[in-house]
Length: 108
Image (cartoon, rainbow, N blue to C red; front, side, top):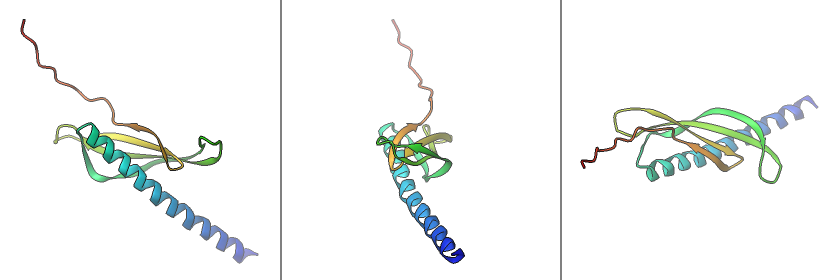
C-alpha cells in the first residue's frame, strides 16, 4: 500500500513536470510573439515561473493558472519586466508594461 502510494505520487510529479515544460514553451512563444509585434527585444529568450495557482478554465474544469515573468528591452540598453499568464495551456493575459513614447514637437 505504501509503495503504491509512493509510485502514484512519483507519477503525478512526473506528469506535473512534463505539463509545466509544455506550458512554459507556450509562454515563451507568446512572449516572443508579443515582443516581435511591439518591436521589443526579448532578453534571455526565456520565461521564469512567477506564480502557480488553481483556476477554472473556460469549460469550468479545475486546472493550473501559471504566471511567467520575462524581461525585454525597448531601447536596447534597459531591462523591463513583462508577464504572461496561462490557464491550462491557453494564454489569457500578456503584459509588457507602459513605455515612454517620445513625440517630436511640431512647428506651426
